[in-house]
Length: 423
Image 1 (tube, rainbow, N blue to C red):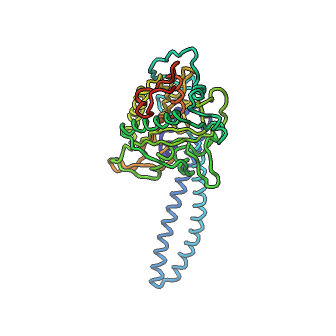
Image 2 (image 1 turned 135 degrees about the horizontal axis):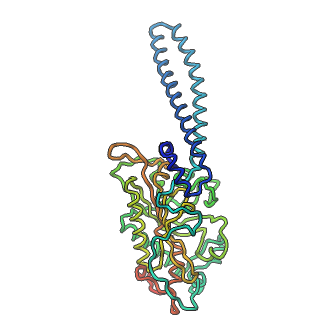
Image 3 (image 1 turned 180 degrees about the horizontal axis):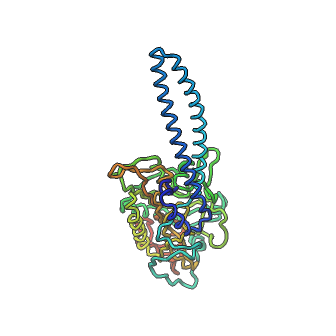
C-alpha cells in the first residue's frame, strides 16, 4: 500500500509509473488525495473539540470547587453540545477513513524505473542467460513419463487421495525432493539467512500484510470455519513475523529462509502447459526474505539474484533471468526478476524463481517500521525470492540430466540424495 505522504508529494510520478502497468483507474489517486485532505481536516477539528472538552472539564471542576455552581452549569450545557458534535464528527471521520482505506488498497505498487513497459510475457526483458542446452537422445522423455518409468512420482495416486495437482513422490523421487530442500536451506544459511520454521496457515491480517488479501484472483485456499488461509508461499508467514513492529536500525538487515509446502488453487489453469509438475496445487518451496533500510534495498536485491544464480550454476542447469515488464509484475512488486530453466524435453522455459523488491509497499500494510540513525520512524523495504521452488527444478533435472543409461544426479546433490544416478 502506498504511503499517504508519498501519494500527496509524488502524484505525477506515481501516475507516470502506473502507466507501465496499464493502470485503468488513475482518477483514484485524486480521490485518495481529496479524501486524505478531508480526513486530516476532520481530525484537526476533532482534536480541537477534544481539547476544548478537556479544558471545560477542568474549568467545571474548579467552578464547583469554588462554589460557582451556576457558572459550572452553563459550561456543562456547552459540554453536552460539544459531546454530541464530537460523536457525530467521530462517525464522519470513521466513514472517511474507511473509504480512504478501500480506495488505497486498489492502487498497485509503482514499478521501479528499470521495469520495461509492456503488457504480456513477451515484453519481459531477458538480462542474463547461462549454460548450454543439452542435446538429448532422440528417445528423450518429458518428466512425467520419466517419473512413471523410474517410479518416482505418481500423479494418479495423488488424484485418488486428493485430486489433480497433488502428486505423490515415491522412493528416489521422494529422496530427491528431500535432498533438494536440504541443499537449498544449507546454501541459504551459508549465505547468512537465518532458518525459520513457520505455520502453514495464516490469519487474514497476515494475508493482507503481504498483499495476498484481498484475494482478487481466488488463488488462496480458505478454511472457512477457522477463517484461516493455507499459505501460497513462505513469504507470507516469514514477513509477518515482523508485522506491527518498530525496529532499530542496528537490527537491520534481517535475512530469513524457510521451507514450507505451498498451496495455490491455480484457478483457470488447464492445458498441456500445466501437465506433470509444471503447475500444482501443492508444492514445496524454499524461500528467502530480507528486511532492509531503504537505501540498501536495491543492493540487497542484486545479492539475492547472485545467490540464486550460484545455486543454479551448481546444479548445472541451463537458465535465464528475465526482468518482468510492468504488465507482468505482481500487484505488490516494484521490480521482479524471474529465473527460468530450460526444459529440453518440453522445449520451453519453466519459471523456477521470482525475486522481488516491494519497496515500502508491504511495510505500509504491515505497519513495519524502523528508527533510522536520526531517530525518525519510517517504513522498511521488504524483499523476497524463491530459493528455490522444487517442482520445476525436479522437472528440469529429470529432463535435462536424462541419458540412455538413466538420470545423472548433479555432483552438488549427491551427498544429499545418497545416490548419483536414477536407473
